[in-house]
Each structure stands twice: as C-alpha cells, then as structure tokens.
Amino acid sequence: MNLGSFLAALALGFVAGAIARALIPNDAFRHMHGIRSWLTSLGLGLLGALVGFWIFHGIFGIGDTDKFDWGGIIGAVIGAVIVVAIASFVVKRVTGRSAV
Image (tube, rainbow, N blue to C red):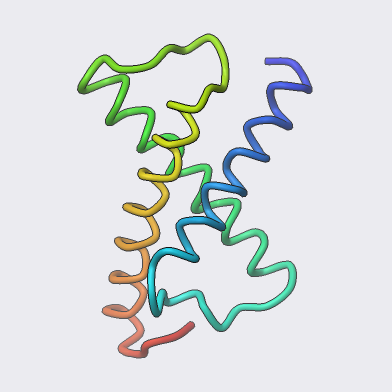
C-alpha cells in the first residue's frame, strides 16, 4: 500500500463516517466536539467501509478490489450507517444514557 492509497482510504473512511453520523438521528456520539468527533467519524467510517466491502464484495460478489469507485463509496456509506447504528445502540445500552 502506498501513501496515496492510505490517504484515500482515510478520506473515504472519514466521509463515510460523517455521512453515516448525519443520517442516523440521535446517535450516541452527537454531543462530541472537536478532535474526538473527527476521530470518531474516521474510526466508524473505516470500520463501516470494511463492513460495506465485506457485504458487497464478500457476500454478493459486487465490486472490485483495484480502486476506489462510486460503488465502493456507496458500500462504505451503507456499511458505516450499519456500524454507527449498532455502535449507538451498544453505547446507549451499556451506559444507560442517550449520549456519551
């Protein structure tokens, strides 16, 4: 993996995480500000991109592994929405609060 691919993966993860957090109402991470919010979006987005890749490429055989394309971005956002929803549910259930 070269530096360009690494930076592209970080950008894709951040964008997917930010979009997913915007789409999920009342997520458990909504009260975060600053660098914690950015890092949370990045982490959830990267994990969501992996989940989306696994769902679309691993299970359905859709997409390629060569480059970033629109299918990969859509899969990453769908995966990130799944991850944010599950993470919000778990955080709310464990902490017993609606926000972290």
